[in-house]
Image (tube, rainbow, N blue to C red; front, side):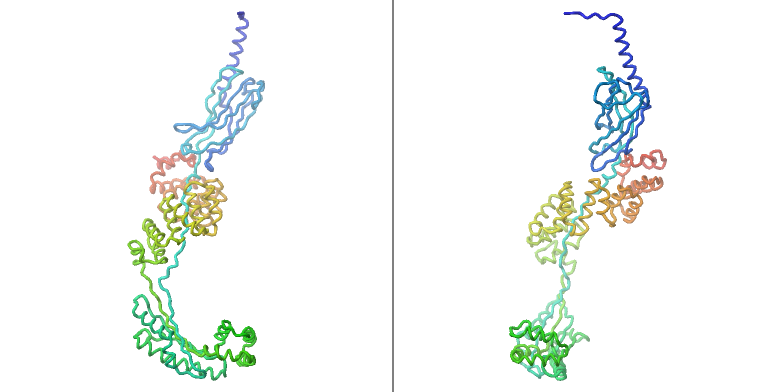
Length: 574
């Protein structure tokens, strides 16, 4: 094996080379304070679950060793750990490689990167770590240069409180009923015949009046007699006929009500009267229903003439049809129509709620759906709607509303199951909107957005829920549009994130004296962005008084870095 001998001159030259290389790196390390940094944003900002950074680094003249290779790594350090952004390798102008060259005369580089956000990053600092070497020599660690403070995570304050849409009931406590019967007259006569009083509809009217009197849920509201004459004959005669028919019907009707002891009928104004000397409207209606051959021609005649005398004359000229009219139509128009109006009074709210909770089978569909609206207790609402789905399994409203309440209870899986049943019954916009709300609660933003966008006709809830999604996606302008002018915490948050501090404060103020510490916390953040120290301290004090957890959160929130030395601010967080 051949031995290599080094003479003293070679050793001295090599040592000098090594010493000069290390000395060059040491000089760079010692002068690292002359390197300048500009980081945007500073503090860093969380957006859509990500922390992005852009930085520009400037090296002064004669700083960067011509033979040095430097690895720069931005690192976000937090208590208990750190996350690294992508590294950048730099080289002096005499290094033969393909890295970013930094001239000896001075130069710089830019770095960008992103890391997933996690809450620990709120209280952190961004540093740039440097490691340098000369050719293949051992690397020299330059240490860290702090370039930014903390991560603003205000968008994570969004309240994921998806709104669901209920379907309304058709419950009416008072349902009007009307019982009607006709008395028919012989042509040119006004006397009430006994045969008419024995007719089926008159007897039915009398029985219904008796039944109503015996039913405590029914109340008599009034009665009416409308007397008519057919449109054949002279107007003067028909006028007198209709008036006389009114009187004869009134005589019978009052006696019948008195015999049945309907005391309400004695009240002034209970019975109203009306006469129609020539019932052209009734004539037209009967003609339209008839099978008379020339009825279309006759109806055209009716529409052409407004004078009843001319109308009658023209119709009589159609001799082929007149006999049928006289036999089939006109006798039905010689009548008095008697009607009794009754209100059916439903169960009271107290009765409905009690039955909804204890005996839901005693209620019809509309009653049980309405009963659920009479309590603010979510457990009671859910119980009543669940009973409604069992008693009326084909009712989409019952299944949908049960899902709505279950979502309000935070029972997302149960809500989803109920809404899937509703979808099977009727896949309408409301059900789609509520399934979108469930997807939002589950964190499935893509499905939620698709469903909600297709269900905008369901009301305000889809827009509100889409506003939440847009905040989480980092599209703050779209979120503002979705929230619209309806004030809410999330609407104010969107306005703040979109750069409108004053609008955000106005929205929060419009919420009134709410007992929510985070409302006042967001006011404090808005004031911090506007540089209003008193607004920061006063609102933060109110927030802490309502929610003690706010204090610890504020202590690490980079929104308040500018107020770290404010005595009132420091005292508040102690």
